[in-house]
Image (cartoon, rainbow, N blue to C red; front, side, top):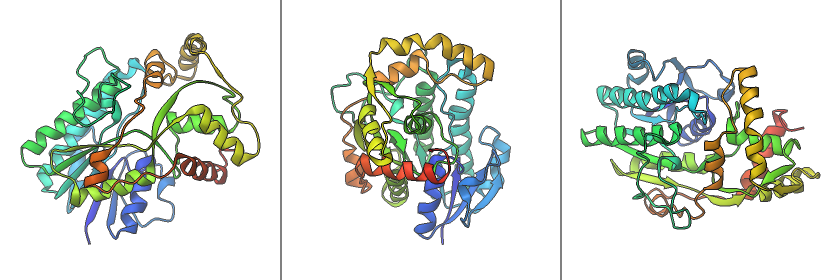
Length: 329
């Protein structure tokens, strides 16, 4: 039986990936960084201390490991945190690759992001050969995912068997500590976002992504990157799905984009009071406005067997999960 190590195991991807790996007969070990064990409730998963930003702490985690899934990342849209973003997403990735090489793991599957690529032109299909972000003034998160990608390719050239996945916006159940996109869905369902800009994005179900990631162990080419997308959907349409499911109107209407800019000073003040990163920033607005419409994920479908379910099914299952957790009333 193969032993799989997951960095970021308690996160949204890690929670679903753990379940998929166990289903496929793997033994699962997760680096336990934040001591939040809700994602592992009822699962036979080994938890081990470790911190990807501390190279020395990783050696015990990698002992005896066959496969590594590097999902740990800091998703932060606030430029004030650029140094921390780089530490986690760039140097942390370097440390994981180094530990994987040292431990002679058979495979590393690295989770990057669609945001590692330049978005424009947004009206043309996005494929794996699109240029990676290299502008020092780019959004720090985007730049960090591009730089992490390059680090993995460098280690692949040195002999590490590594494949890279670029998921689109990840949605789905088993998210025990909702981040930015998932919290937005919770807020929509609870009627806290009755007015939404007329934006859309490409969404991939976290369960489909997990299956594709496991497939990459045996089918992914070393040094190859794979865009892993699902269905493009407008946020207003997601609101309609939720309204139908919950029996109440969740989103009433769309609003012009300029209203989101009016929220910027209030978001800044709130972040100072709560001492937490801003969610609404110029960068996040730009990201929402420029989501690529057509991401065919052809390579992932052909080589990894990627299959994406309808977004309506994903939203239904996600809402049901959050209802059971008490986050949607």
